[in-house]
Structure formats: structure tokens, C-alpha cells
Image (tube, rainbow, N blue to C red; front, top):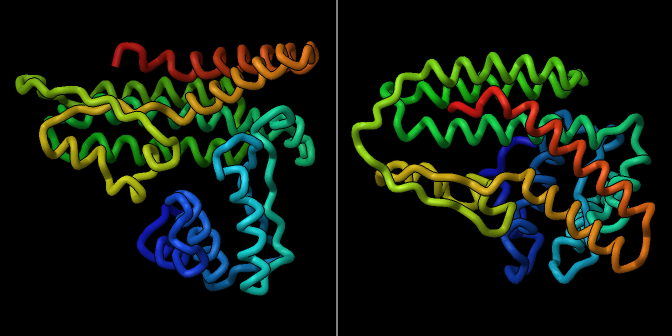
Length: 261
């Protein structure tokens, strides 16, 4: 899906009451905007909206989206909703192959590229150069993931990307306060939802650090391990522990070329 815009917000508000949290409104609008695109084929479409069983209303988004699709006459489009709790990785077995591993490689690579962008852009000597390098490598990573790139191929790409970022001329004569951005994962990560907060802070003379998307995956891994201990489910504990360790090893391998940036 393309990044949300004012049309997404407008469409989402038409189908919500105003009491819903912002991510619910915008993801609803994004879904409807895609459905309204010329050439959209409902019989070839599906939406992915993970669920959950905790106190956050996020777990009800997928139910609500199904209701909205029915309201607009597109109730046959499936909304896939793997539950982020006990069966998160098991739920993905309905797909061909293992999409979680492929998705994780993309998440780890993009997180690393974005961290480099935020570290360098406030100090770039030539305005716009860091964005150009970032955009080029984001496209390359997306293309690689879509073509099921191996971890080795992505690691080689990340080394080339790190070299490109390292070549960006920087000026550190002017000190900048560094501001850490935390909070609800969707809004903190979504530039339209947070009114491009990071660029606004940079324009005021700050550098920023954003809590990554991977942090959410690591956190849900941790909560599943705690559930396993509580329920004495040794199989689930072992499975989540092994996957968590493998994910961190993959993340570290992709981020290693950027350690000196």
C-alpha cells in the first residue's frame, strides 16, 4: 500500500465514529483507497491486519475492516489476521513457504537504513543527498525482498549501502541536541500520522533517534516467552526462543556494515 495521505484520513473518517484511535482510522482509509483505485481487482486482493487478544483495540481492527468491506459491497475480500499472541508464527503457516523469515529480512534491513538516515541527514553538507541515498537503497531492498533474496544477498547489498551512506559529506560544526522518539508504534513510525515530526524537529536544529519497528517484534517475542513460562508450554517457549535468537542474528548481520556510521 502507498503511504497514507489526506484522502486516506477522509475515507477512514467516513466509516468511523471519531472515537477510534488514529491508526484504526488511517488503516481503514488506506484499505478503502486501494479498493477505489482504477483497475483494482477484488478477486485478486487480500488485506493483512494482524490481531491480538490484549487490552488494546488493535486486536479488533481486522474485525472492523471486515465489516467495512461488507458495507461497501466487497465482503468477499479476505482480511488475514494472524494473532500476535501465542500462535503468531503458527498462523503464518497458512501461507506458502515461510513469509515471516522473508518479512523479517526486509524489516531488519529497512530499520538499519532508516537509522542511518536519521544519524546523517541533520549533518549533511549537501541538502537532500541523504534522502537520495536512502530512497535508492529502500527501492533496492524492496525489490530484493519481492524476489525472495537470500540473507547473503541482502547482507552484500547492505555493505554497498553502508559505503554510500559513509560517502555523504557531513558538517558537525554545529552541535545538535538528540531527541529520542518513542510511543505508540504506528504513529511514531508513520510520517503522515505524526505530521512529519522528525523533519520538523530537524528543521528546528535537532537530531533524532526513532524506536524501531523491530523493537515491536522483539517485544512480542518476549511476551510469548513469558506466556509459555506461565502456562508451562515448553514447546512454545523453545520455539519462540529459537526464533528470537535467529532474528537477532539476522538483524545483526544486516546492520554490521553500519556500525561505524
